[in-house]
Length: 207
Image 1: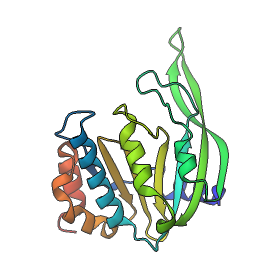
Image 2: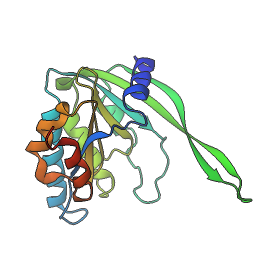
Image 3: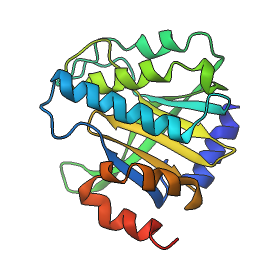
Image 4: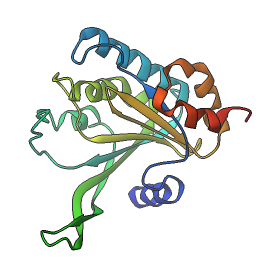
């Protein structure tokens, strides 16, 4: 399962990305840490998730875990919370590396490896506590617990859809075909991030 999903993502969503995507605003205009912000974030992200995935859909939960480090800004105080939520699902994992370019003290280009755990779980949507996972992600930069600091992706191979909530600011749905996201684009058009609206409109209008 793990190697299969790793290869699938590399081929279909290189860098976990697709040029066909919709990016949604979740938290604005409410103040960071406020109850109104958290309430809006979770209302919106659950509506988007449930538009993409139905209870009977079989999906994969893909996790990139950079380790139980002490985040100087947000603490990363509950690193095991995500795994407690998913303890009833079969888990496969492997150690992987992201490779980036940097410069040394003499200005020479060097490769920098960042180690992470690549983790894959699968199940029906109805068996996955996605509301609590999304809520945990919304808590991370708001100073609330329990929080989830890992990168979490929800993947449907049947639909070729990849969904990622990066934090309380927003989330992004990726697909291989425009038709897979057209209904989402139309239904929640008012939530699209203004900065990206022109780009996103070009993808979906008249398609």
